[in-house]
Image (tube, rainbow, N blue to C red; front, side, top):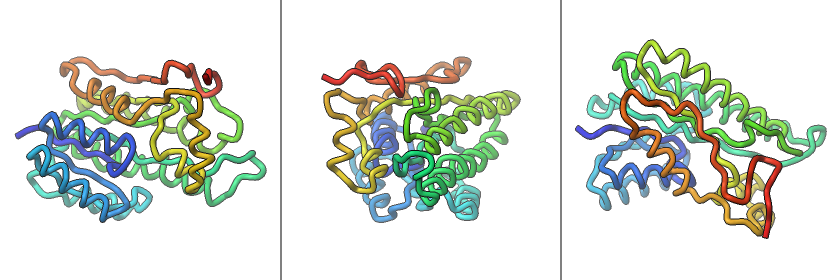
Amino acid sequence: MPAIVFITGATSGFGLACANLFASKGYHLIINGRREERLQATAAELRDRFGIKVWTAPFDVRDQQKVTDTIASLPAECDAIDILVNNAGLAAGRDYFEEASLDDWNQMIDTNIKGFLYVAQAVAKKMAVQKKGHIINIGSTAAKVVYEKGNAYCATKFAVDALSQAMRIDMLRHGIKVTNVNPGAAETEFSLVRFKGDAITAAKVYEGMKALQANDVAEIIYYAATLPEHVCINELTVTCLQQADSLHLIRK
């Protein structure tokens, strides 16, 4: 049976791009998202286009019990997960530290750290039994260089960086790969979510630059996932040509 890839946040952005790419290569999928209607539509489209099996896992990664129960009770035919693309995450707001919304902070911490951990551990338990697997965490250049008004978001991505390193060490004894991918500016729904539907402000983030596209990042994830068994990329940081890090970019 072809390998099975579990992708969180699979209804948009990097997650959707990964779902399409892995499906096009014949992988079976378990796809997760909060928006169940969109999730089911995505699953149906992937089945029709690529003739693969797609199972859906409609949950919010912040819901610890739902995450644990859903992953623990996956059907037997998709229980052996080969690859996890731990992608679900978001930025909420961009404000000075003393002016930031505590609700925004809680949403990012609950999603980007706690939800990230819930999914990773539930899948890692299965991989540990199998003595194989590959966990690919989606971080950010914000985990490397903090920028103005980035405060809690940057902190959550620094946590993803640290946790990826810790997971890599702890999973060694099980033969499980862990890769952390840190994208820079990418033209997805990210900024639209961050600015709470303000399309004008969101568009300004990418003005004057050819930003990364979701497919660019998906190709990198696929490359990391398909290397020989003895090769593990621990970390990759990727930006568009016009960006060096969170602070240094050139607009034309």
